Length: 366
Image 1 (cartoon, rainbow, N blue to C red):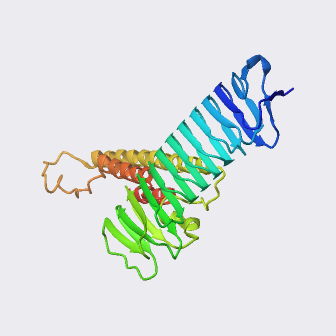
Image 2: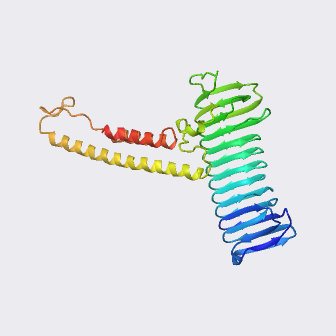
């Protein structure tokens, strides 16, 4: 049976530790319903403040104006419909949020998705993929380890991302937006945007009516409209700026966004699975190539030994009457080529299919 607690319309709920998964739903009622194993639950109440911890999974139904303060979640977290302030110190797995208020998170050890926030979003560390949509306040992500997909933020933006970024942005006249990525950035703006773009990247591609690209420049300042909003893009890879609303649907042509199509559900899981499958296929192909190269070298060595007789050796001509065979492929050189292909795949400079084609070509050349 759920435990029912009366603590007013806007209680303060402190969760010290959850060893399992946590599910929280805000509702119009004035009671707090806690569904958990009573033997694993440690609960205290002081007026409108509720403090508890649990060694198992917990499901909560709380007034929608509640404030949540969470110290530690050992499993997954799902929070929906809570418009009071939400603060989370650490979660060990995935976190999903929908229709919430202001959010401040210290550390997410896996993937994070949020859709719909009335206030600001702050995340100090996210160690997986992040997808964020429809935030009325500002977005600050100090460190995202993998990919970021962001759309519909109405406040200022400052994000630092380890890999790729896709951003759909409607900048305000006085807005400031800073996006740093370890790899590629795709920025989609409205056609009538008024922004000053300051960009640094390996290659800068501006797909915009009346704007010409400038060859192989790695730095560029571009003013669109009256330039009132300020956008700074710093990419370890390529930058693309466009007003094509469908750009995200074909972003695999630009970076490593194949199959995203801005379907926010399962974003991190899908990307991780694709990368894992691609790496496994490439590694298997590389191992097969290495084995074939070894067998080829052994056959060449046997042929060479069988053709060498007792005639005097001439370094230029070989044994008398025997034509000098072509030098067998050097295994270290082939190994360098193989590792270069795998490195390009890991750095997302080529797709898994391209890696397989290159490895096939390497194999065929032997």
